[in-house]
Length: 496
View 1: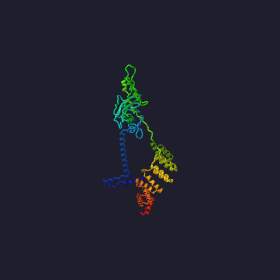
View 2: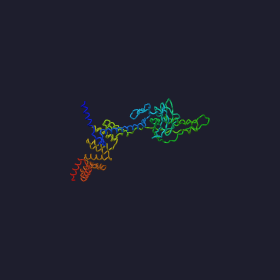
View 3: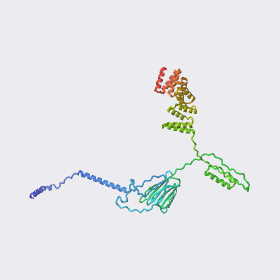
View 4: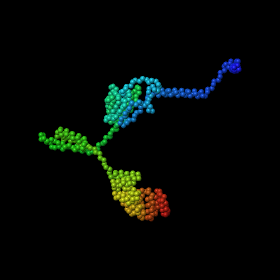
């Protein structure tokens, strides 16, 4: 123990400053410590958290002071809209609002007691909306009652279930609203609205009130569009028929003057009874008045549906045939074209389409029969004549084909003259071929193949100069490669 005590005294002596050291260090202050980095970050975070808490508290305070959002308006229905007010109002996300004082923990401020029964305080008519729409606003205090709205013959009816009207309430009409009536029956309050025009649609929208303002119930009545008046049928003005009367009879003879009534316009029409009443009054007034009271025949309007004409039926069947062809229904197309030919014998477009269908099906004899029947009903039709001539030429019947084309002349169809020139050329008659080609080119001068045909016919006739000119005209208009080579060979052979 003594050794330990000696060591402790020695350490204590070493810790003491030397004599005079305290006076030398009296004015010396230690330098300020540098801030620790971790402590600086902690202070900054603390300041950020404090600022965020202050902003959050301010935002919460501002949100608490804003009024509660109103319920969105229900879309108007075609007939009527019913409102159920027993469910508590909810916010936009569907959650029920917290009770007063639940968020802050403080007791809610005492509010004036609301009436246990809904009370209709006022009904105002707003200016007419677009298209003459009638608009009304009803102010209700207390709980919101269930509302039923419906149309009536002369306006609309609004029923507030379990509500009553305030004492002395007498709403005034205005604008498109002609009358407003309040009726209490069976514990419900009914508001009847009469408008100047029939109502087509009734729409109701509820705007919930606050502690200081009542609920607002908006009613919109959309008028029906006006019915256009139909113009009366034009009728010839006839002189009023005068009822024949018998000759005047002496007084006291026991005979009475009679008036023959005009015939009734139609059985069951109200005008018959109306026209009989003036005649009866005239008979009671006396013979002279009866002759002057013969009524005029009331004009009648009759709606008659005219059946389609044969031409209309043919065009309709032709259109059905084309639609069937596009759909690949060949049997339906053949049937439709046949109906068109039955409605109008020789209907050109139907006959041509049906003939092409028969050729497509490998029945040329049936196609020829259709074309000959159509040409018999429509002689001189160029398109039908050309189709029949091609059919006959393919079978080698050139003379019959040429005769078919010549029976369709004279005409203005350039294609018919061009086909006639080609067939005359094949039959070995270049003069007739040249004449037909010139007639075709007079109508359509820019057909290069017809200029080539004319050149061939002229070359066979020995008119080389004219043939060369025809070949050159054809080359200037542009030719297919095969015809271009042929024309080049003929020009070379003619030394040009």
